[in-house]
Length: 155
Image (cartoon, rainbow, N blue to C red; front, side):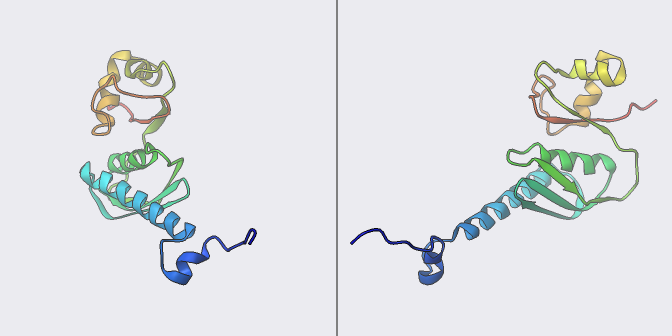
């Protein structure tokens, strides 16, 4: 009989069996967005009208955060997720505040070393730890590639 060629994504359209590659991709993208939304809500961040969409490796986030800190933590939750390379932050904030700095952890980093770099005092590491709760559960559990929030010190 020989080799026959077919349109690989047509089967699901014709017979309603299974899903096309595009349909599977769309479902996976929607599932990832739902998981990110659930993670933000489970962590207790207050964001009015939270909406997260994922396209390829970019998460886009909308909503109104109650504070700049919450806004930054939502961005970190999304960005520190496997498969997400960038976050398009389209959130607004109820009360404008100064933005924190961000630090990408490299091999050999630890919180006191990072505190020394940004604050000039290694003993200020609890400030960084607190600024990244509840995403961090232990000051000794950070990993290369993770992005941390580094807030300005209250004078």
